[in-house]
Image (cartoon, rainbow, N blue to C red; front, side, top):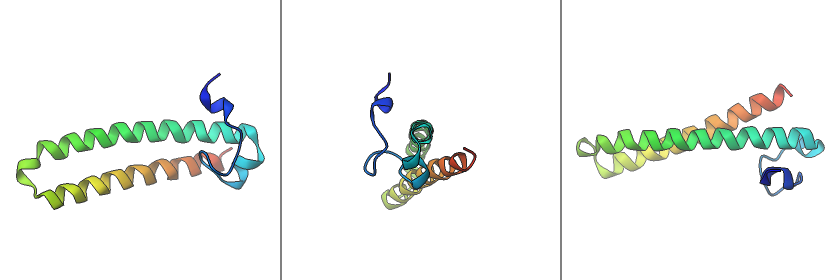
Amino acid sequence: MSRLDQVRPNRLDGFVNRDALDSRRVWYATNRFFGVSLLVGGLLTAGGTGVVLAEKANLATKAIAGIEFIIVVAVFLAALAATFARLRRM
């Protein structure tokens, strides 16, 4: 049993929406998918950071911060969109 299986549907933890709150099966499947999406997104963010840092000599500090912000937000929004798309197919 994973930690995810111990968290019951609630309004505070995890990916919360009406469908997930109404069904334990949907709750666990959706949150498992969202968690994996965020994990993959974190790895992509780390890779993007590596690329940005490799080009650091050619970029200003504000440009680096802006690029990093865009990477983090884009990865999170992609994980969120993928989870909503998967939820619609359930």
